[in-house]
Image 1 (cartoon, helix red, strand yellow):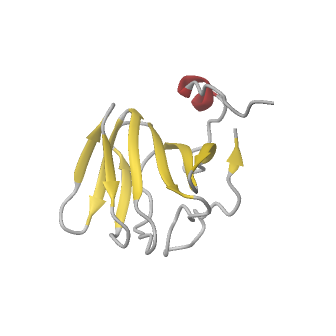
Image 2 (spheres, one colour):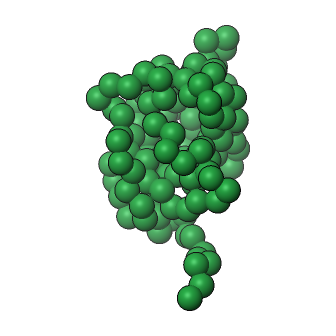
Length: 123
């Protein structure tokens, strides 16, 4: 049986409405492909052992960084290097983003707290 599948991003984003609760839609080479809907501001956090890629599918993201924010528009991505403290902020009512990060990486990194999603749902 083949494990190959075509993933339609619009369908995947349509499968959930919760914000700040990433979903896993694929895996490759020890990395997870995650989708998240976000609104407002997230918590400041860092990932000591993981780089993160944020690709904006819909909306406008401002990535808060201690040395100056970066704006990421639809169709653009930003890579946050390991150890860099950051805070995703939705500049529009809602942002849809795709993320690549090592499997098992906590969404809140070293910050922990109530926004930590311990077990990510797979779509």
